[in-house]
Length: 85
Image (cartoon, rainbow, N blue to C red):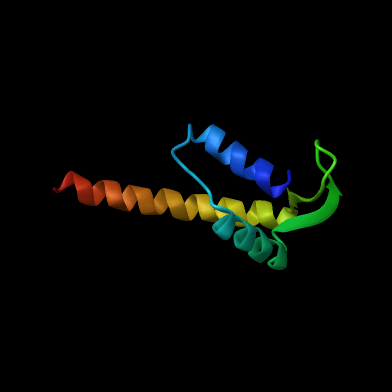
């Protein structure tokens, strides 16, 4: 997907709870591309504009698994603390 489509998809999946701004999305995409987690290629969007398309790499899938595990551990720890409140 290209950057704007990624923004729309995240907002759609989260039912508009998560809102992304260009100022945060594109630097994040750039950092993930530099880290080798995403591959970026130029293409043409649905409205015939030049756009950069991103796809996840094998290294990105591995990093995603690690981040999901970290998130699960963090949310479980927060849940444990909240049980004592």
